Every structure is written in structure tokens, then in C-alpha cells.
Length: 163
Image 1: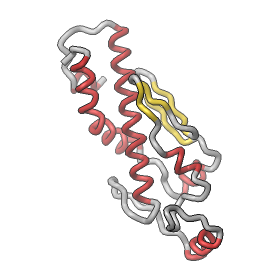
Image 2 (image 1 turned 90 degrees about the horizontal axis):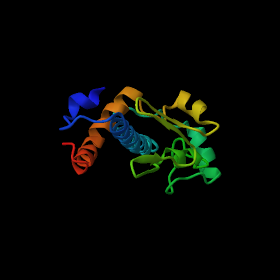
Image 3 (image 1 turned 180 degrees about the vertical axis):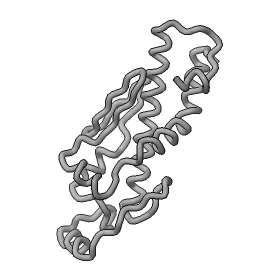
Image 4 (image 1 turned 120 degrees about the horizontal axis):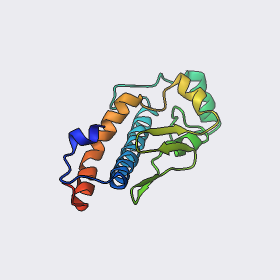
């Protein structure tokens, strides 16, 4: 795995230690991935471009009128993909506690020593995602999340006396 190439640990690890470190790393990367998704989502709700150069198509004028009439506003403004706010809440990051990512309601996560699975578990999320991508592409997101998580992971390895 890339961990050995990127982080040179100073001692040979037992299988248990290696698994603990990989699980910590994957949970940390997931936490940063969710933060990146949240920021990208928030960048796009008012028509802006996210850090990956993605933008949602604007709402149709009729949709804007309907949202205003129904008072479906977010911060006093008409927002894309915000109606009940359930999707908005599911995009927000959970918590990273004791090396584990604790998901928010509406999130589906599975973290192992070799994989990370993240999704939004809201009934209509898949339909919304098919029209306006609510999650950043995996490859771009993982690369950005690994870069963002690196300083915190290095500090963790130092605390364990491994760097």
C-alpha cells in the first residue's frame, strides 16, 4: 500500500499495529473527504464553482419562483439542492474521535484497512446526484483528502513514536 512509500516508519510493525495504523489513516482520509464534499456542495448551492472546477446548472426561473413562493430559502436565498435540508445535513462532516469517523445521520460509511466506502443514505440522493453531482468524483476527492489528512496523520505517527 502507498503508506509504506509515503511514510517511513522507524520500526517493524506487528500485524495488529499495522492494521490499527491503516484503519486510523483510512478513517482520517474519510473525514477529510467528507469535509471536501461538504465544501464543494456549499460552493455550488448558489451557483459558484467548487475547487474541482465543477458547477451545477442553474435552477430554471419557474423553480426559483416556486421556491420563493413556498419560502424554501437557505440563508434568505434560493439555493440549488436545498429543500428539506436533509441532504444538506447528510453532506456535513461527522466527527473524527479516537481514530474513528463517526458518521452523521443520512451517511453510509464503511472503513476497513484496505477500503473506504462513503455515500449519502437519503431516499432521493441518488436521483439528485444523477442530475447534479452532490459528491465529488472519487479519484479527485481521495487525492485531495489524502493531501489534507497528511499533516494530522504524520503527527499521529510521531505521537506513536513511528517517525
